[in-house]
Structure formats: C-alpha cells, structure tokens
Image (cartoon, rainbow, N blue to C red; front, side, top):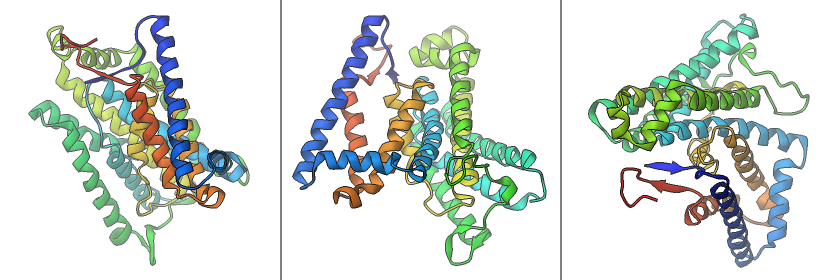
Length: 352
C-alpha cells in the first residue's frame, strides 16, 4: 500500500494543494463548532495556541525543539511508507535511541571534548535505533511477518527497556529519570535564555540527506520502485528482501537520532514517558507532507505549533490541551476524505 504524493502534471499538483486548503478549512469549521459547543470562543483558542507556541522566546524554543524531533520521527515513517512498508514502531525506535544516548552520556568519560563526546553519543543512538528498527524489517523479509504488528509490539519492549534503565540501572533519587548525562555530551544552546539547540540543524540536514537518498541514489530508486510495484521490482532484479531490511534500518536510524535530540538536547537525561507520543505523531507529519522529506520540515513545524500551543489552552481558553490533539487528528482524517492523502494498490486493476 502506498501513499500517493503528488499526481503527475502541474494540474494534478494544483488540485492536490486546493484539496489541502479545503481540508484545512474543513478542519477549522469542524473545530470551531466543537469549541463553540464546549463553551469557548474559537478565536480565543487560536490565539491561545499561537501565543502558547510563539508568544515568547521560551515558547519558541520549545516549538523549535519539538519540530526537530518530529522531523526525524516523520522520516522514520515516510521512508518505509514509500516502499509500501508500514513502520509504526517509530516510538520504540526513538525510545531505544534515547536509552542509548542516556547510557553512553553517563558511562563515557566526561572529560572527553564535546567535539568528540557529542557525536559519539549521537551515533550510538543512531546505531541503536537502526538495529532495533531492522528487527521488523528482517522478520518481514525472512518470514513475511506483518511489519505493522511486529513494529507495534516492539514499542512495548522499548518502553520496558527504558523503565529498567530509569529505575534500576541509573536511577536519579526519587524522581522518574536517570542520572544526568555529562555536560560535554549535551547539545550546545547558541541563544542565551532559549531552549533552541543544534538539534534542529541536525534534523533539517538529515531531512535534506533523506531527500537526496530517495531522489538520487540506487537505494532510493529501489524503495520507490518497490512502492510502485513490488512484483515487477523483483522481476527487474531488485532484491526486495534486502531493500526491506535496509529501509527499516534507515527508518530506525532516523527515529534513534530523534531520541538523541531528546536526551542530549531537551532533557539531558532519560525521563519516564518522555516521548508524549511524538513517535506516533510523526506518522501524521509524514502523511500531511505526502512523504516528501523536504516538505516534512514545514509539516513538522505546523504540528509542533499545535502540540506546544495546546499546552496554553487551559489558561488561555479554559479548554483541555487534548483539544490540540483532536485538531491534528481531524486535519489528517479530512486530508484522507478529500483524497489529498490517497492509498493505492498499483497492482489492482481498479486503482486510479
């Protein structure tokens, strides 16, 4: 199953953007009605979200940090989706990457230079996420096991691993977190008084690299070919089993890097329930961006504004922050209803 991104021709692309705008308008109407029924002013809700996400340097910093994490979790979903492979294990792969970052940030010598320690810890997260992501890929390639089920179940394994590290291996007193990583393993924050760190640059560069791989390399061509027609790709000589494993390796690496951004950038330790479903939210980011690695950057920013801004709904409009999650879900569903996001079976004679 593939997600159809942009249809051939300028006319189809224009039509897709028009449908996107209609979906956004429909979301605004639907959510305005819901907010009104809940007894709040829709304009006050919008203002609360925008101010909560962009109203001051601290909030902007939070939004930028979440944007970087979402870029990477979206990439971990988008690349397999392009090959008709469903990776719903980004949450677990990110968690394993965060565990690796926390452990390495604690056990490696704190006297190492930041120029050495930061990339070593980061690469440890990438490798851990890639290996964890390769498990459902290998099971799919070797036994044709459903990657949806295996990647989903592995999320629980990752959560248990994180809990063990937090409470039994490197506990920090009576709080639900590990010991802090070494200062030299933390991402620098170039703006005084802001949470913004180099993680956003890492994420943007990674998105550019992912776009290059998908557009200009043999692996990227193979991934897209399998997504278009798996049987034909196999007949043409593409080793689909190998590409399946490689695709999940790449996806896990992206998600593991997101875990590094959380530990080395945002939290400086491993917290219990640190993710807040950012791994799953990345799926929505990828779908709205139509699986395009560069469009994911803008999509991630949009979702980050909704996620961070929703935290101010209680004070600004008297509503639960859950309303922000409802806005996101409604938007994605309407994108499907208006066929901006379309699922196709190319081998199906009825596919259009």
